[in-house]
Image 1 (cartoon, rainbow, N blue to C red):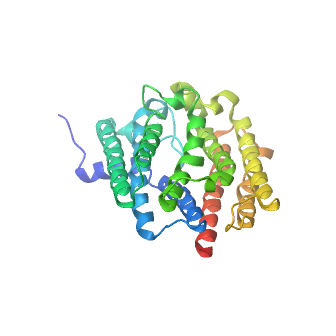
Image 2: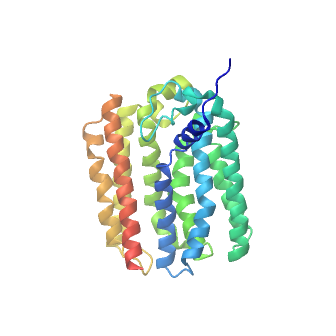
Image 3: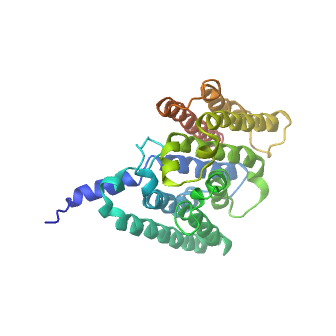
Length: 310
């Protein structure tokens, strides 16, 4: 006899699969771009921000479901951590795979529909929904066939581009109403932080990714070198922000000292990753948690400074 889980349990597991805590990082990145645009004189306004975020939110959420679905083999060898290894839901609830697919596709469709509404209301032009489509497809094909970017050695590049450029650029475009070079001075550091993020996420999953056939940078260079590389990327990002501040190369209207000072948080938090890098998964996961937590502090601090100075 086939047994079915109660509907309440289904909803609970689908929410767990969504890994909702990741939405905070996306919100902070989107908001950072939006607040930079506001500081540089964009038309801005709360209606633009909320409607624009309503475009981004479902696309971002869809990635959790598509990744869980197409990473199910590699994740089956893993014990999930707060930031990696999938949600673990499909490992014990394979009956929800179909719903993971439906939810992911539906969320992308909602995002695209909202992008058309936003374009009409705020006269954004045809490039804006195409940009949203590109971002959605990049998130989908991170694990989905036929591209399976994370399985073919391109996961780091695609994630660094998405986190470091596409998401903050979307927030910037939404609030500025057009694309211009205003965000470019910040791009090198943001791309470096994006690269550090994906390395941190990959560090706990080395053994499972190897068994699951996932070709990541961490599976190639090992956990210890990856942890050291995270520190180097944070160092380069901090040097860039300090260079912008000391040489006064930032855009008019934005004080870069808070950016330079805030960049010290992930740099100092990742120092143990460099000095005490380890192959041990448990110890490495503690370091990764500190590294990623420092990223949230960095983004939260920069958002707060820009918001208070607006």
